[in-house]
Image (cartoon, rainbow, N blue to C red):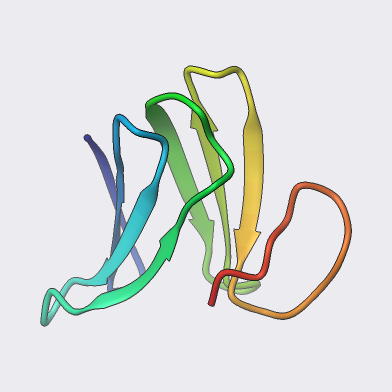
Length: 79
Protein backbone atom coordinates (compact mmCIF):
# COMPACT_ATOMS: atom_id res chain seq x y z
CA UNK A 1 0.00 0.00 0.00
CA UNK A 2 1.24 3.45 -0.96
CA UNK A 3 -0.06 6.62 0.64
CA UNK A 4 0.15 10.32 -0.17
CA UNK A 5 -1.35 13.27 1.72
CA UNK A 6 -2.54 16.35 -0.17
CA UNK A 7 -4.98 19.11 0.77
CA UNK A 8 -6.69 17.28 3.65
CA UNK A 9 -7.04 14.05 1.66
CA UNK A 10 -5.01 10.86 1.89
CA UNK A 11 -4.76 8.50 -1.07
CA UNK A 12 -3.86 4.86 -0.62
CA UNK A 13 -2.73 2.76 -3.57
CA UNK A 14 -3.41 -0.95 -3.20
CA UNK A 15 -1.75 -4.09 -4.52
CA UNK A 16 -4.87 -5.07 -6.52
CA UNK A 17 -4.70 -1.80 -8.52
CA UNK A 18 -7.34 0.30 -6.72
CA UNK A 19 -6.84 3.68 -5.05
CA UNK A 20 -8.84 4.85 -2.01
CA UNK A 21 -9.09 8.54 -1.13
CA UNK A 22 -10.06 9.34 2.46
CA UNK A 23 -10.43 12.54 4.48
CA UNK A 24 -7.45 13.10 6.78
CA UNK A 25 -9.58 14.61 9.56
CA UNK A 26 -12.28 11.95 9.79
CA UNK A 27 -11.10 8.90 7.85
CA UNK A 28 -14.31 9.00 5.78
CA UNK A 29 -13.94 7.53 2.29
CA UNK A 30 -14.15 10.30 -0.31
CA UNK A 31 -13.92 8.01 -3.36
CA UNK A 32 -12.39 4.81 -4.70
CA UNK A 33 -10.72 4.66 -8.12
CA UNK A 34 -10.91 1.17 -9.57
CA UNK A 35 -10.89 -0.64 -12.87
CA UNK A 36 -7.90 1.16 -14.37
CA UNK A 37 -4.81 -0.62 -13.10
CA UNK A 38 -4.18 -4.35 -13.25
CA UNK A 39 -1.23 -4.38 -10.83
CA UNK A 40 -0.07 -2.71 -7.61
CA UNK A 41 -0.29 1.10 -7.52
CA UNK A 42 3.14 2.51 -6.67
CA UNK A 43 2.75 6.28 -7.25
CA UNK A 44 0.06 8.90 -6.80
CA UNK A 45 -0.22 12.66 -6.88
CA UNK A 46 -3.09 15.13 -6.69
CA UNK A 47 -3.62 18.50 -8.34
CA UNK A 48 -5.73 20.40 -5.76
CA UNK A 49 -6.64 23.09 -8.31
CA UNK A 50 -8.17 20.63 -10.80
CA UNK A 51 -9.33 17.88 -8.44
CA UNK A 52 -7.54 15.31 -10.56
CA UNK A 53 -5.29 12.49 -9.43
CA UNK A 54 -2.42 10.81 -11.28
CA UNK A 55 -1.58 7.20 -10.45
CA UNK A 56 1.18 4.91 -11.69
CA UNK A 57 1.29 1.15 -11.23
CA UNK A 58 3.43 -1.91 -11.85
CA UNK A 59 1.36 -2.53 -14.99
CA UNK A 60 3.33 0.34 -16.60
CA UNK A 61 0.32 2.66 -16.92
CA UNK A 62 -0.20 6.24 -15.76
CA UNK A 63 -3.85 7.18 -15.28
CA UNK A 64 -5.46 10.55 -14.63
CA UNK A 65 -8.64 10.28 -12.51
CA UNK A 66 -11.23 12.93 -11.72
CA UNK A 67 -14.48 13.36 -9.82
CA UNK A 68 -15.72 15.75 -12.54
CA UNK A 69 -17.82 14.45 -15.46
CA UNK A 70 -15.87 14.33 -18.74
CA UNK A 71 -14.98 12.08 -21.67
CA UNK A 72 -11.78 10.99 -23.40
CA UNK A 73 -8.27 9.75 -22.67
CA UNK A 74 -7.48 7.58 -19.68
CA UNK A 75 -9.60 9.77 -17.43
CA UNK A 76 -12.72 8.33 -15.85
CA UNK A 77 -15.57 9.88 -13.85
CA UNK A 78 -15.33 8.03 -10.54
CA UNK A 79 -16.85 10.62 -8.21
